[in-house]
Amino acid sequence: MTAGCDSNRSESWKVIREDLHGLPGSMWQDSKDLVGQKENLAILLAAGGASGYVRCAQDDGIANHFENQHTFSRDFTIAQGAIPLAELSLSGAGYLFGVLAEDDEMYQVARTMMEAQAINGLYTETLKLIAQDYGPNGEKLAWPSGHTSVSVTFATVMNEYYGPWVGLPLYALSGFVMYERMETAEHWASDLIFGAAVGYTVGKTVAGKYKPEVFGMNVLPYVDPQTGGTGIMLTKQF
Image (cartoon, rainbow, N blue to C red; front, side, top):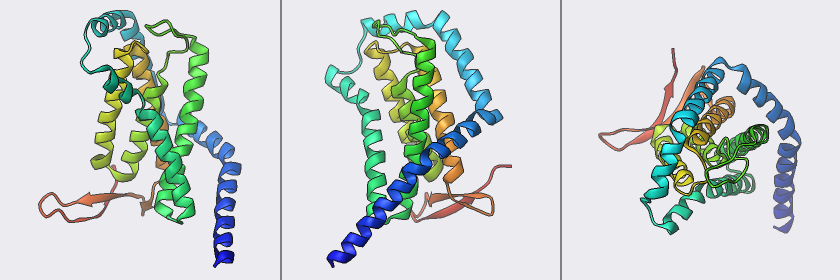
């Protein structure tokens, strides 16, 4: 029995080592895919334009609104700010569980999520260092919002794998994160716009590479609205 456990543990560490060894190459390829897709460039350019407009015309007014009005209690607001950290923790825990339990679905989804978050972090932090921007509270490296990009990346990957039944509530959760960032004066609204665009494009690009397909069609879970029965469905965009 002990030998069997040792063998399983050895195989698990082998998978983890192989993933770590292959991560830089996968990140490099996915990064090229990210900037090479016209749809992504269109989204990022549109978000950049919207972010610039809001910075010039709306940021001060929005910041003043949140300075004078607080919708949620301080404790609840702080909890909202912890959502991205919880999502990152869930990704890591899901990956370890998938490897150790030999759960292929959990492993694949969590592995995709961790790669997406790694690329998202690289892009977000690089943009922060280039922009050298300040938030409403005077703290440096505000644009784009990292909390927002992390949360939207998480929601987008889950939406790609499991469809809107899972994705839409997670996007709503990302909305709470963005609200918290403005209410606590950590970010301007313009920071959130581009952070969300980065998270969405990264999540969709990476998940689109790994999510299962059958004859070019996406495999998604399905729930019959009348009977409540569950299954899978195949979808394809034309």
